[in-house]
Image (tube, rainbow, N blue to C red; front, side, top):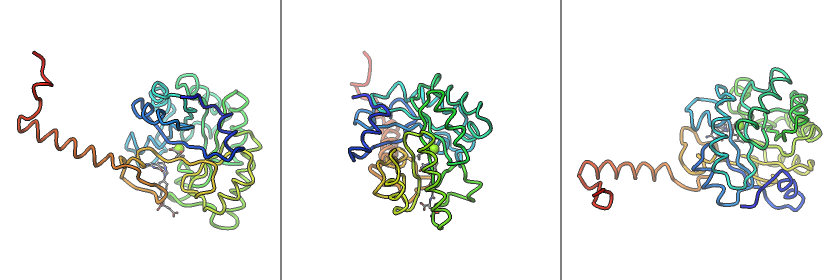
Length: 266
Ligand SMILES: Nc1nc(=O)c2c([nH]1)NC[C@@H]1CN(c3ccc(C(=O)N[C@@H](CCC(=O)O)C(=O)O)cc3)CN21
Ligand SMILES: CC(C)C(=O)C(=O)O
Ligand SMILES: [Mg+2]
């Protein structure tokens, strides 16, 4: 597949071509997804929920992110590879932020990192970017703030919230992020932010007017069903397919129908 870079992504905003992104956590899935000319793969810290079975993303470590990024890297054919910086890997000091971003690039092979937050973290973002690592921002319902928000709560519904989100988005652009994920941002506000910014907005639950869209792959494939945010559309029922396949396998082994002659060495 044609190699996508940050230039590919920036150009799509200019031309008005929609940008596509999915999360991805492993080699097999990276091969499958990138065979379809997706623009970006995100090794999301949602892997804490989806792959590790935690209740939220707060326990995810830099080592977890590197482990999964290496796996995705080997299967990726051409997509721009972005990895989330996990909770507390960029909050404490600028030095931490740069060191952890560097590990994600050097050891994991990510081409960019994503961080959650606005004005309060622009110094960390600038330092990472100055260290030659492209950064994606993430605003709105930022899951690493779950304890501060008191749950997975839509942000930007009050006038003050609206103003803060716009100011954060503009601050991120000024600091040099090359794209910003807008999560669960009310559609008209996401539209306004998208129109104000020269960098692309990638929406998840933020309506039709964002420059691109992202979903958690296990959600859109019907694999992860512990909870289903309203913004998820199921494009397949792979969970159901797996259950049926496993059921048939068990039945056939018990009845002696599997293995058959063609599955047997002579
Ligand atoms: N599988 C999965 N999909 C995701 O999209 C996702 C993760 N995991 N883990 C990290 C975060 C958590 N996310 C979530 C989780 C729950 C809601 C949720 O329940 N939202 C409510 C709306 C809440 C409100 O109206 O304020 C909903 O009904 O959609 C949203 C995003 C998004 N991210
Ligand atoms: C949902 C996307 C944007 C994300 O941050 C993740 O998967 O962790
Ligand atoms: Mg994330």
